[in-house]
Amino acid sequence: MHRNIANMVVHTDLNLLSVLEYAVHYLKVEHVIVCGHYGCGGVAASLTNNSFGIINKWLRNIKDVHRLHSAEIDLNDDPTERVNRLVEFNVREQVQNLAKTSVIQRAWKERKAPTLHGWVYGLNDGLINPLCELQHDYELDPLYRFDNLD
Image (tube, rainbow, N blue to C red):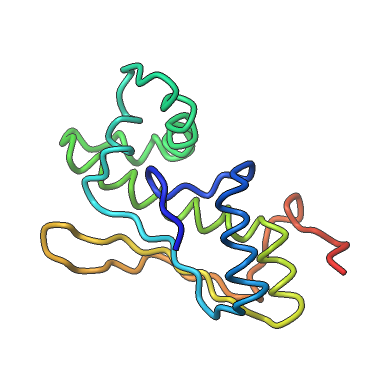
């Protein structure tokens, strides 16, 4: 398990990548789950223009997700619903970011696993909302595909 603010998969996060490499390559896990939660404080903070010091660097990644999906997120006037919609988009984007890693692409090539899952946990009701699932046959944008994974 790897935890961070707003369940981010950042391509320069060596801690995350080390955990992922160990789990996928050495433990041969069959499933990797990105699990966010409704009402996430990190996601809520990213929707503001407040400065949070060094945390701004991390929140910028979530702001990028917001920018990609702002047309749909900003349709809602309810701040809670806006946060929760961004939570869902963020989980989907982080699953995509997992698929972009050489760790996952190598495992998909060698053993057709793991399956990637995007979930959101409801703190109020304890229910898990499964949002997406990617498997080894997922058609990743060629821009992010590695050819030399031997």
